[in-house]
Amino acid sequence: MLTMRIATPDDVAAIDSLFTNCIQYLNEQGIHQWSPVYPNRSTFEDAVTMGNQYVIEDQETLVGAVILNEEQAKEWLELKWSYESDKILAIHALGVLPAKQGRGYGQAIIHLFENFALDRGYEAIRFDAFPDNKGAVHLYEKNQYEYVGTVSFDYKPKGYQNYYCYEKKLSPKNED
Image (tube, rainbow, N blue to C red; front, side, top):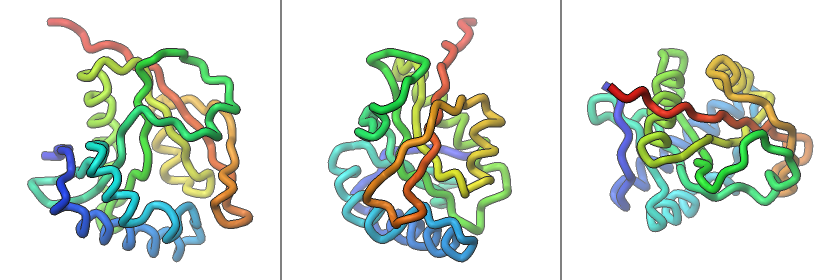
């Protein structure tokens, strides 16, 4: 069973290793969305300190990690978002072990995020995605995440700076 829990300092090395594997795997496919600049060990340590770093486990085995908070990149301010609210959950640095990709984990993780957000009173989810990561983009769009626009991150390598931004308004759970 897939679960998500808040990361502890003891998880940082495993999270860093997971992202090192993800970066290598993506780079081998010509998908240069991440680099040693971001995300890196310092990113994960800071997120653990802030209480925003989560690990995703399958029967207590680490399969993914993500940062969840309300912080929206300054570049996102350029866009006209569809949903205005003080309760927006932002997703950052989502990684799934390459060996676990293509096995339905992405779909299950989206359900984890949406339930996490609903349980905490969030009204919508926002994130950015690298357009060359076709598998991720397809997964988001298949799950009714709406494309809002494209932003550019100056700190990314030249030619790999543009990212698609997505959002989804959440529907409250049905009351039994």
